[in-house]
Every structure is written in C-alpha cells, then in structure tokens.
Image (cartoon, rainbow, N blue to C red; front, side, top):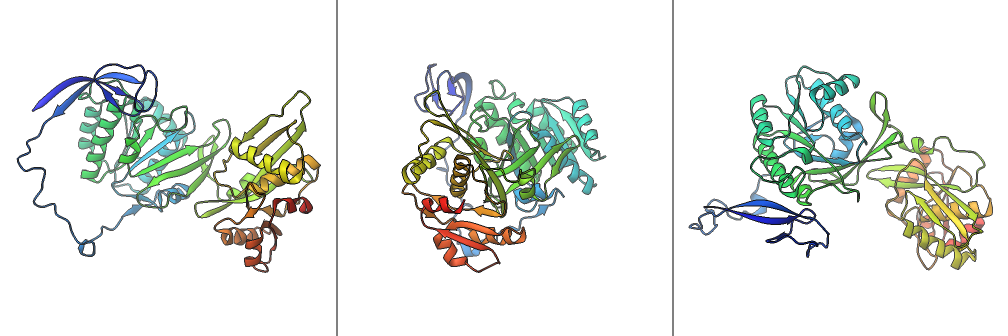
Length: 454
C-alpha cells in the first residue's frame, strides 16, 4: 500500500515536521526546511519481519571473502585507499571548488583504462559537457578506446546507460547535480542525495562495479548533504590544499578496507597532478640560512614521516592589545602556548603581535609540534637563529612540562636517513633512545629548559 504526504525536511539533519518552521528543533539551523513529497510503502507483516534463512552464525564457521584490489599505478592514490581499489567499492571524494577533484579522478580512471584495455570505464558528469571532459582528457594525455564519457543529470537515464554499456568502473560527478525522477525535490537536497546514493550503491554492489562519487563541500568544510552519505559509502576521501598554491593533500577519513591515517601528496602543474616522492624535501625547500623565527618538527601522516618548517614572527604592537594570526594550526592552541611562555618564561606578550605559519600550507592536527612552535616564537622574540639540523618534537602541557609523543622511533630513523644531527624532545624519550641511530637526543623535562638550547 502506497501513501503520499507532504512533509518539511531539514536540509541539515533530515528532521521531518508536518508544517514549515523557521528554526529546526533538532539541529538549531534557521530556514533549513524544504517542502517535499514523501512516499511511504507499507509492507505486509505476516512474517513478522523474520527471515527463515537469516539466522545467527558462529564466527569461526563463517568463510571470509578475499579482497581483490586493482592498482591504479598512481602511488600516492594507491597508498591512501589501502594498496589499490577494492573491486565493487564505492568511494566518495570531496573538496573545495577548483581544488582538482575532477582532474584527480580523470587521471585515476585514465590510468585504469590504459592498463586494463579489456575493461570499460564510464565518466558521468552533470556539471561539464562531453566536450569539456574530452578536452581535459586530452590535456592530461590519457585518452583510451575503452573510456566512455556521458553528460547526464537524471539518475534513471544514467542507470539505463550503465546497464547498457556494462562498465567495470564508474565516476559520478557530482552527486549534488544528479536527480531521481521518483523524488519530488530539487537537486542537491537531502532526499535526492540519499535516494541517488542508495540506488547507485545497490547497482554497483549487485554488479561488482567499482565506482567513485564526487561531492561538494559546505563553507564549514564538510561534504554537503546528509551525513548518511558518508555512512553509506565504503571510503571517504578529502582533497585538500590551497587552490592558489601548487600542492594538494589527499586525506582518507573513512576506509572499510584499509588504514584511515594515510595521506597522499600531489603537486598541481599545467599537465595535471604530479606525485611528490619526497614530501619532506618539498615542505622544507627554499629555507633562508641564518633566519630566526623558524624551527623544524617531524609529524606523522599515516605511515609516513614528514618534516615541516614552522615560522613565527613576534613584533611589538604600539596600538593596544596584540593580535594572534595563525595559518595551519588552531588559534586556540597558539593562545595556550603563549600563556605558557608568559607564565614560565616571564616574557610579556600581551602587547605584541604573534604570527605563526606552517610552511607549505599543511595543517597540523596533533600536538606533537608544540615544542617546535615554542622554539619558533622564542627565536623570533630573542632574534636567535636555530640550527637547520635540529628537530623539535614534543607536547607541552599547561603546567610547562614536556610530554613524549607516540611513534617516536619511526621519526628518529627518518631523521638519521636525512642526516639531521640533533633532536630536542621529552626527557623520557631521550632516556629510552639515547645513543641509538647516531643522533644526539636532548631530553628536557620543562619547557623553560628550551631557552638554553636556542
């Protein structure tokens, strides 16, 4: 039995009400309700929802399925997805406008089409014409006879073409522009995104099609649409970076078939995206010898160690309270570290402007670089340069203590390979690894001891 009704659905949290409301009582968003036709299908409950063949099984008696992966021959991309694409998986890629999402997937499917001549690849775009996509394909020099292009926004037509062409790989660009004629809502709405994603997932899983979906993001930096979109797909990847710069970071947020800590580094050029084989050298290039206000730290991105330069500038503010400007770190974290300096170093910073920048545009997520940030600020304030062969790794607490960070041995090994001479870190770490790998390890218990090392 089919029952149709008009309901108002919040585009932020999918909360439903029978009458329009200015503010959503569930998530607190204003003017987020849209009128939509909801179709409810009542099924017979004669079986009471119990399937005879669906009964619990003992875990030791269940045969696990082996994951078959396909290499895209793009090393940074394969690293992020866990060593290659899993056959029949659904991957969602989000990023800011102009960041290069379409360019990335065009290169990915181009490589797949080139190395798998007997398998068909279908690229569907609702934002670009076939001619525009073909121009990008030719510019990237990845044309192939088994690569099909389609411009379409109606899901029912797309489904017919997929069943007709029978491709092994599908790209849908983007999910926000695709609409289903069975849902009476505008494109990009919660109902449309949920319905199209559900239909695409069922189609790809049933036929073993490996598919990619491009998603727009909001001004808050999250993928537009309902959160259920990220729950339904197998892998969620964010393509990050400054659209006016040259570097791009591919970061996985969810992966049912691999690690969620891996990142891939790319460089944007006139011929597309190029892999960065040595990211540490990329983020540390063009350093000025003898300059003060800069220090080096080592962060972990997945299984890879990255050496990053942190720059700080401390200048006197003669107009009143000092301002705090950051690029690449949380502003609240900087405020806490400045409070530590004022309290334990006795340096007044209330009437100074403090600027902190992470070179290369990379964003620091963890607190392993606290010691390096303090060193950069002190170096700028006292006009003392820091040796380029010295690395600072450690978390600083509000009581002024220096704490050890995880996976420090991997960083020390990387330092030895790149000929860094000195590591300044927590005292506990120094006691454990002192004398190993040929690196001088200086352990400090309190952040105040940092003053003697600059």
